[in-house]
Length: 338
Image (cartoon, rainbow, N blue to C red; front, side, top):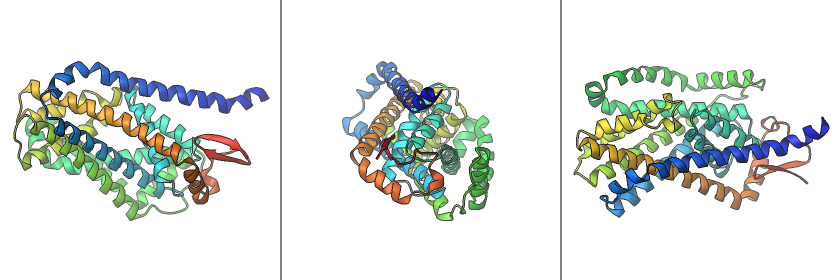
């Protein structure tokens, strides 16, 4: 029994790597499987537009990461941005595995490696998703005329906006976070989440969706000549597509759901085949950006691991570290005896 107990950390470490390999494999497989449909459309788009469009996706991804880290740091001790980005970006690759709950599982496990309580990571991910929904509905309001005329069944999404705004109130946010911690038999938050935390997270989330809207607008601009109102429409449609795909958790990364909304919006300017092709190009870019950003976050964390470990040790509170062996440190996810 003692041998099994001693071997558990190594077993869990192997399982984490297997899970990580699986989610990266699913992401790469999806990108490769769509390449034949994507490549012919890419050939018609100027290289400069493709590069800038992909850069905007990556910028949006980074803004979304900053929103996630802002919530994480608002719930407890400050986690270095590079470490928080690694947990979020690598963990969110789990959405490519059917049943997107794997994203939350992987983020909790990665967070646990760095001494962040699993419940705290879960609360962060759930609240970041909620902030994303609120932000998307705010921007999606600009696409209401299109939605009401072409997708009236989606109007129910806007019923979530008042509820989301209530849940973002610092007192409500603090109470809900403490409730989840209590369910996991952890002490409640010892402070109230600040308005600054909420505003910072919402601002980063809005910026992410604006980047995504610009990304799609650039792709459309390669085939036609859209105006500023089209940019507003596409940004709103992209934001609503993200929220709708969040509810389609049985599909890998909500595949097909977001595309349906985008094709409907782009069809106002393009033919259905053109809009469908651009939606596939957009999806491929998001998949590539997810993999690239996760790899970059892991690389930065490895390069800066000593400094990150020192900053984490200086800023942490003992309650945030979940039964670490005495005399050990958190270094790149592995406990090492001094």
